[in-house]
Amino acid sequence: MIKSISIHDFINLPESVPLIDVRTPLEFQQGRIPGAFNVPIFTNEERVQVGTTYKQIGREQAILLGFDLTGNKWSSFIREALVISPGKKIAVHCWRGGMRSGAMAWALDLYGFEVYLIEGGYKNYRRWSAAQFEKAYQLTIVGGMTGSGKTKLLHQLQTMGEQIIDLEELAQHQGSSYGTMNKMVQPTQEQFENNFAFQLNKLDRQSRIWIEDESLTIGKRCIPNHFWYQMRTSLVLNIAVPDEHRVELLAAEYGALDPEFLIECTQRIWKRLGPEQTKNAILAIQEDRMSDFIRIVLVYYDKTYKTGLHKRDQEKIKTIAIDSKDIKVNAAKMLLTIQELHSTQQL
Picture 1 (cartoon, rainbow, N blue to C red):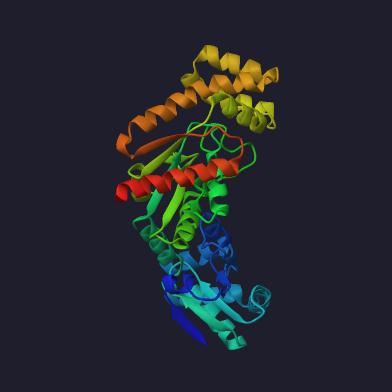
Picture 2 (tube, rainbow, N blue to C red; picture 1 turned 30 degrees about the vertical axis):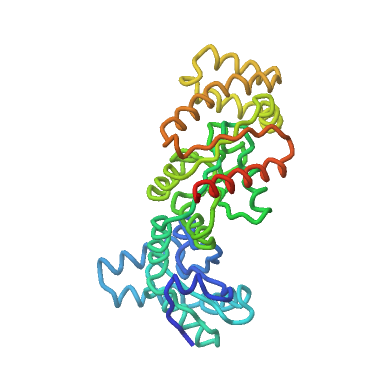
């Protein structure tokens, strides 16, 4: 049985149904629905052949060529689907709900699968994603200068039952010149948005959502404009951590990285650091004086953060001192502060 279903209804099904994306590996790599499995009907080259035939000769010839190219593949498609969904309940999509997904749905239905056919395909998922960023959310921004441990505090809040979005995890980048940490590979912009929207959909929009203060861009990924505007106009809980704690945390984190990576990243910001400070920072890296290196680059990052903070509505910034090294204590203090703040506002 084949059942057409909207992307909204599919994502919000009460039970999880495996999803196969029958687009080419190249299309899948560019952007996909989170959790989807790639079972491409055509290779990258075959899709070009079919598309060219469609444009130059016509639809019927393109369909015949498609069958010629896939004739001996159908049994392997079904076997792959059985591995993905042994219970023989599956969803299928292509780019816009056209012939590729229709053909796959037909074959799986013939074999005995219960098939959900995604209306409008991946194109409709992209529309759905964009719509998530235009909704209103109850955001609370976790602010603080570099090395304040904002991401760790964010996840501690999550263990305490709070809702969070970790943009740096989604972007696979920590937001500075050193943000890849010499190991993270950023998703495409398309995939960043896909994953971001998927997570937003899981949250209760009527309840508080904690999110770390970020620039418009995180590495090479860009926060969607409407959501970015919400972040810039939301309440900021600005955590003030002693400088020595920040230096200690960053020195331990960056000290584990390849010195050549640190030097290369430092050279990229030489115009902002200035030639003398860049030289001193690189020398500190080479001599394994991590604390000295951190103190030098923090001058630049602190100045940048303060500039960004001054551009916000000052009435929406609440600064609290965080001086304990116990993350549970600090997260509890943040929760208490925000609860007291909301109680005061309600009065």
